[in-house]
Image 1 (cartoon, rainbow, N blue to C red):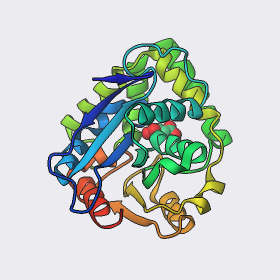
Image 2 (image 1 turned 90 degrees about the horizontal axis):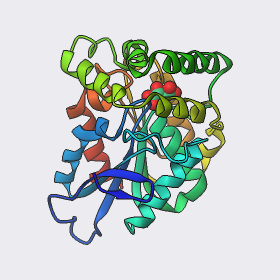
Image 3 (image 1 turned 90 degrees about the vertical axis):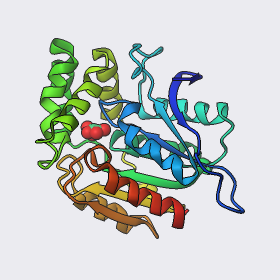
Image 4 (image 1 turned 135 degrees about the vertical axis):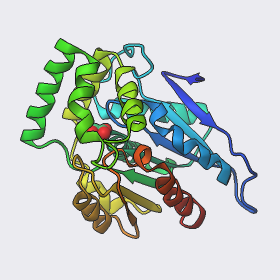
Length: 268
Ligand code: MLT
């Protein structure tokens, strides 16, 4: 993968010319926790619709411990701003899944002018509840004592919906994405997630075209949270993906891509 600043990234150039009268446009997708850029591989085919697809590997998720380690979701967002500047991209459709959504909110708070549109997949604006923070502390202990494989064991049943849990290819792919990460990287991300602010007050200031997608079987950020976001973001579009859990883009890539392609084609 090429690198700019602190980040390596996947870069799929558009496979067809930009639509007539339109400039070359970029879709930037931010990965979830505790996965990696390659979770977005099924979406790279969107380059066939004339979009450049850029997928950053967040700091530390490239197998190196991350130097210096992140302290907050704003650190992740700052790295992405450096990447956009390094690639000379002034404006893009920017989005992410789950933690990628939390970072999308941080990026919007820091630098809204980069947003041509926004994609919020299986995510939520709220910070962690007291119960959620307790779960994070348990996960910190688990990753320090038992490593990434134990985190995969713990998270897989909740990351994947009941329909995908029986699909060995999706299970194996998700496990491999998690196990590729160093325990320090996962621990650093947990600490960043624990300190993220509540982004709910931001929602009413989002005025770019916004797509909200959620798997109907998502138990980590259930559809109800997406319905609430949809009501709070003026003019947003909400799509529920059937037979998908929290990793809707990996579990139902064709349905996810069809929704995203339609949004890019008609709403942005
Ligand atoms: C993710 O998919 O990024 C995580 O489930 C987010 C979280 O744990 O809040």
